Length: 169
Image (tube, rainbow, N blue to C red):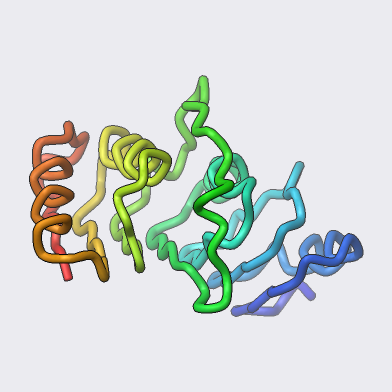
C-alpha cells in the first residue's frame, strides 16, 4: 500500500506483522498492538499515536522511535479498556538516541499520564534528548496534589530544547 497516508492498527494477533509491513509508507499511524515491531522503517511517518497497551510498551516505543526518523508529532495514550501499568516492563535507556529525537520531533502529548516510575523515565528521556521539541503536553486524571508533584518533577527535568513548553491538563 505505497499510497496510503493514514493507518490505524489495533491488534494482538501474531499475523499483524504482514499488515504493519504493508503500511510503512504512511504519514500518520495510530498503533495499539502487542506485536513486537522489529526491522520496520517508517521514512514518511510524521505523526505517531501509540497506545500504552502492552507490558512491553517502553521497549516497543523505542523501536518505533528508531524506525521513524522524520517523526514530528508523538501522541502516547492509554485506551480506556487497557491498563498494563502494573506489569509494565522496566525502562532500559537505549544506547543510541533515536534520530527523530535529535532532528525532527516537535510535539509530544501523553494522555492519562500517572507519573509511574516507568512513565517518568520515558518522559525524562524524551525531554532530555528531543532537541527540536516545542511542546510537551501532559494530560493526567490524578488528584491536584499528585498532579502538582508531577508538574514540579517534570519542570525540573533537563531538556534538550531550550524553547520547549511543558503544558499540563
